[in-house]
Length: 134
Image (cartoon, one colour):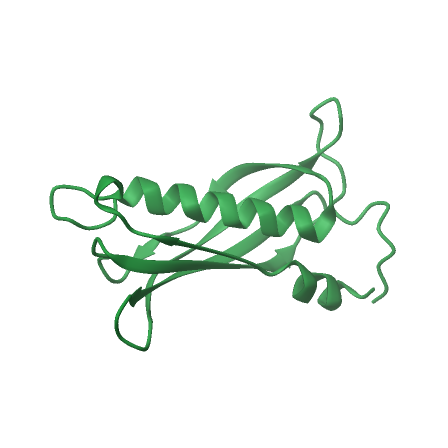
């Protein structure tokens, strides 16, 4: 499998309905809930890519483009963007859609960086042990 094929195969999507208990006093999705969703989907994507233990080490700029109201459907889409020796960056977008109308809009986007770890919690090469062709 090539690196690009691994990237394509590891794309990960999760969806949820925004209920009132997910929202703040403005009746929109808590930013922290959105960040947790983004961390979870990027973690799954990265793990599917390299099949190694990963930890989140940083996030790049997170852009909140559109408020997400209660009663919406949201979908988070994560894709490996770049690969370092022991780390990888995963780009994530959250889309919002009204339950009763067609279409969706980009609401939030950002990047998460993960490091691969061995059993002793020491960094290891992301692609080590994988049958990867250029």
